Amino acid sequence: MEANEGVLDTLLNTKRKEGATKFTKEKNKIYADGITSVADSGVLENALNVGDKAPNFTLKNALNKEVSLYNELENGPVILTWYRGGWCPYCNITLHYLQEKLPEFTKAGATLIALTPELPDNSLDTAEKNNLEFTVLSDLDNVIGKEYGVVFQLTDEVADIYEAGFGLSEKNGNNNNQLPLAATYVIDKNRIIQYAFLDADYRQRAEPTEIITALEKLK
Image (cartoon, rainbow, N blue to C red):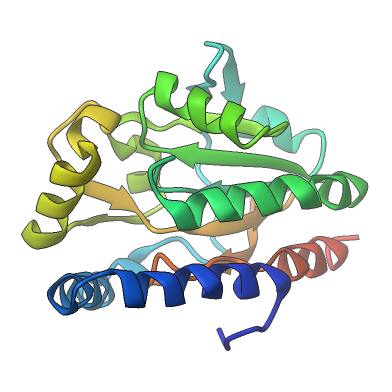
C-alpha cells in the first residue's frame, strides 16, 4: 500500500512516524525484524484468500452473547477484521475509523465483525473506549484465526517487549506469544471471500474505501 493512499493510511502514517522517532534504534530494529519474520513465516501464503470458502464459527461477544458467522451472512455480506488488542495504537486508530465508516458499511448492506485474541473483559474495554457499535468477538487462543490461517508466532524479542510493556499473556490469557495478522475479509452471502487484505506489517490496514468498493461489486 502506498503512503497516503487513503484517509486511514494518513492517520496511521502519523503514528508510524511517531514510533520511528520515539523508539530507540534497537527497538525499531526489533520491530522491523519482527515484521520480516512474519513475512518469512509463510502466513501470507497460507492464509485464506479471495475465492476461498470462509469457515463458519460461533463466538461469544463481550456481553456473552453467541454470534455465528453463517447466521450473520443470511442478512448480507460480512466484513471480518482482526485486531491485535486494545494495547495496539494502530488497532485503536483503525477501530475508531471503522466506527466512523459504519453507516457506509451498513448502507452497503454489510455487517462488520471484529475478532481479537484478547480476553472478553479486555475486548469490552476496547469496545467501550472506542465507542464501537459493531460486534467485537474474543477469539481465545486464536482458534478461529488459525482456521483462517492468519496467526503467526512473535519473535522472542518482540514477545519480551510486549510482555514487559503491557503483559500480553495476561491480556490474552495464555503464554503462546501468537497474534493474528491485521487481516480483513469481505465475505459474500454464499460464504465466499471476495476481498482480502493481508499484510505482514501490523502498521498497514485495509482502507475502508477499498472495503466499500468490494461491497459494491457484490450488488
